[in-house]
Length: 473
Image 1 (cartoon, rainbow, N blue to C red):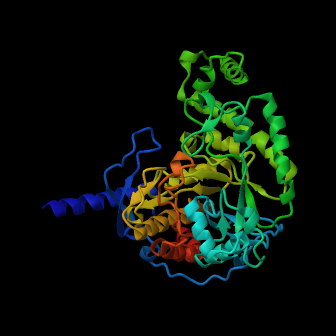
Image 2: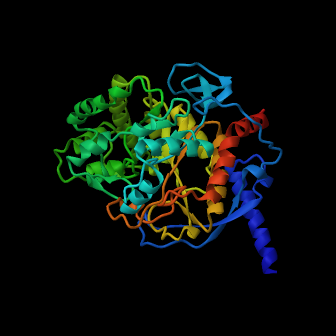
Image 3: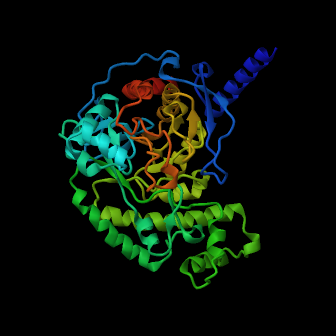
């Protein structure tokens, strides 16, 4: 009886889950994976939620899909579909779908990893010496290994100085991680928090008159990249505090001469509203004002110094993912909206459609991962899911990216990250202390059970797009 009840409950969950996702076929979700969530990072004591079973689909469960061989160019773009060639990566909407376009003008989906760089711990350094002769040898071998797995890009915090020197026939599309507000904010009290910088009162210094001048000077460093064809684009910061109570936080500053306080108070006065009458809609509107100010300053500085490469935003991660005003502001200035998207097992189609509709731009998933219990690591630190095996991690990767490909508005993704956290390294951000986030361990050994699933999806990505688009016609 209990078994029958479980089966009925599971089927109901699958149906509801699929309807929420607007999936094309409920029967594609033929698999299940058990997962739990680490509490750290959401204001609770370290620990885990209960195990739950999640309906999951994979490349093999997509009804009617047969992978087809697609010829690739040296960048990993599809050689059978062309757009406007500019000599640099850019984005273009073609027949209702957003694409990245590689330097040769071929359509491209960025499939990358964050932190593609040698590990910094003593254990990492010892293992590095056993496998590589130097950083250049590491870059050559790593590029080859990742390319064989179907990856064509290196994401945030990667060693792009080394990676860009690999032979031009096998480059990875590199992201450059900048730190506009972070660099400015550290001078005024910003501090390291779990996963990102914290700011006094949870407010950024975007209204400071000195910030615009600082941004202009800071951006001069990127002028050397202007002719680099291997750079996909720039992130301007990481996970800024675009929070629900941002307006309240500016207004709560003790120093009423602070320019942030003055900006918020003046805005509220123009709205003819007093603090006790603030609504959530007003909070969203003011958050859009903050975002507009930030993106306008940073975008101008980036484009002045390097007009050839894309601006990929500042990696939205929290409340702002559901705020139209923030995406509308970003869309005026960025080429692609970046989102660190952790809080779902399967990306929500309506939510992804909203991002593109609100901003008028495509999006890139700039960070996400799942951790495996069979790695032997604690997996307490950081966000994301925990599953039982590396194979389950691979199924999560496939289930997640299938929805991205299906959306029609995603131009790529970046898994966090290349190598596991090393628990022996104490000089790290608290969110990166002891977790199985990488696709290889601290001895540079790949987890084959997850990478084989990654390769299967990565290699099939373009034919999956063709299949999903044909189903929409």
